[in-house]
Amino acid sequence: MEQKNFDFSSCCHVVWDAVKAASSSTAEVQALPRWDLSALYTGMDDPALTEDKLEAERLVQAFAHDYQGKVADLTASELAKALDQFEVIEEKLGRLSSYASLLFAQDSLDSVIGRFSQSINEQLTTISVGLLFFPLELNRLDDESLQQKLNTPELQRWKPYLRDIRLYRPHQLSDEVEKVLLEKSVTGDQAWCRLFDETIASLRVPLKDKEVTIDEALNGLSDVNRAVREQSGHALATTLQEKIRLFSLITNTLARDKAITDHLRHYPHSTSARNLSNMVEDNVVEALISTVRSEYPRLSHRYYALKAKWLGLEKLEYWDRNAPLPGEENRIILWEEACSIVQKAYDSFDSRVGKIINTFLKKPWIDAAPVQGKCSGAFAHPTVPSAHPYILLNYYGKIRDVMTLAHELGHGVHQTLAARQGYFMSQTPLTLAETASVFGEMLTFQSLLEAEKDPQRYRQLLAGKVDDMLNTVVRQVAFYEFEKRIHEERQHGELLPERIGEIWHDVQAESLGPAFHLAPEYRVFWAYIPHFIHSPFYVYAYAFGDCLVNTLYRVFQEGTIPHFQDKYVTLLEAGGTLRHKELLAPFGLDASDPAFWRKGLEVISGFIDQLEQM
Image (cartoon, rainbow, N blue to C red; front, top):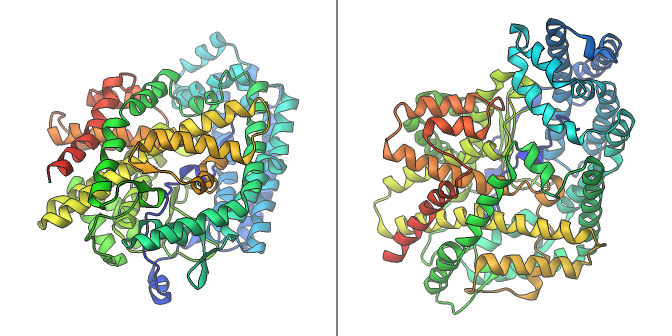
């Protein structure tokens, strides 16, 4: 039974393999915004935090007393009242969980914060056991009885929630087993995820005369200077290799743990649980994956052959994948300018959306400083509807950092608009969770492109966008294929680090194409990617979102849909109440049709066409 327990990594827009290329001075880091979490709690010792835990325990006990073993006999109005109470309790627990997660993301190396976060997770798991009966009993209601109740006005609001939770009926276990799985999660998969996070955060990569974090070393892979890129690549490979057995153990253990749970729940494939949680049909996912893979030659293979020519190389090395074009400036974009660029792009699209963006930029809701111990990459956390979302990123002043800001602010807009649906129904399935973020990136990119008059900088912007789109679509589909092969082979026994590296090499060679020579040391570069650990098979959501938005943006540009902005805002406001078919129907789009995905890929291909002609 899936429980609503937000994991900050699952909303993370990872800046794949170095989207940031310059280190910031101490003064610049200090000038960047840091978030203020007091909308949740003022600190780990906040009396309100202790009071909320005690209140949650009391409410759970009262809820169990009133409803355990009685759900089948509730009238429609009584069931609606129970659902209202259930959501209030879960939101209170969600507030505590959100605070602990954000605090840990802010500094995962602080032992006091680590202990506090683990303690909160353990306490919330214990409290949540007392609520577990409710969704289990809901799913034992027979269809006819529930349908009669759903026909009453009192339960209209809860239709989407009950629709979604009932999808898990075939995979629901006995109350005793469900309790054991929930209680042991803190010493099972959650503990392995924590080990991975703390290991990654503590790694130091020797570069030149100093040791840097993984995130800083990844920055070097997009440096203008090829020698810096190569040095960064070798240093990263050496550092990851030193810990490769630990990373392999974590990966093997979590894959086996998932296989055991999938078997108990009768999921037919390793990807089935993710697809179900995404509320997307298997055939839709397969249409996306097969379409993208068939387009590798026309997209990534063609583009990287062009890049090799631009760089004057017979073959690209793995450290050249995100290389800037020759002549590109190492210009640093200050935070204030980045905010202005993104604000202008959103304002030009819709004033309602622009107003929300302005609130995020003016309030202390963003943590942008790249400091030691902080979570790498970027994410937007919705927290709870009674508070507001928070955004984390590591800002180094490159154009891709500006795009990351635009991306995460898009998430913030989506989460803000969807919050009106309440705690349970505000969260969007992953397949649509990237819609507003990628759309915001596209708005910002097009705004910059239209304003650029210098042909060389125009070409550099366009090439940078293609790099990012290939990272978001082709690379994520390759990640998905890597995960599938790992989980399939793990069923037959533990995979040695060398075998994991072989699988990584094979999927990367297929996706990147003949323009690349992939050195043996590149076989360890799977090890730092958090999605494989925190959220198995999450990665296709990025490709789903990018292709969907490419198609959606193309419809917007064509101007064939009247009141497009109104329909777009309505889509975001729906949160998790509607499925992708219902949400895309007003735009005349259908994700189950392979032509839908090809239309999205045509946008990338069109950009490559332009670059070929320049």
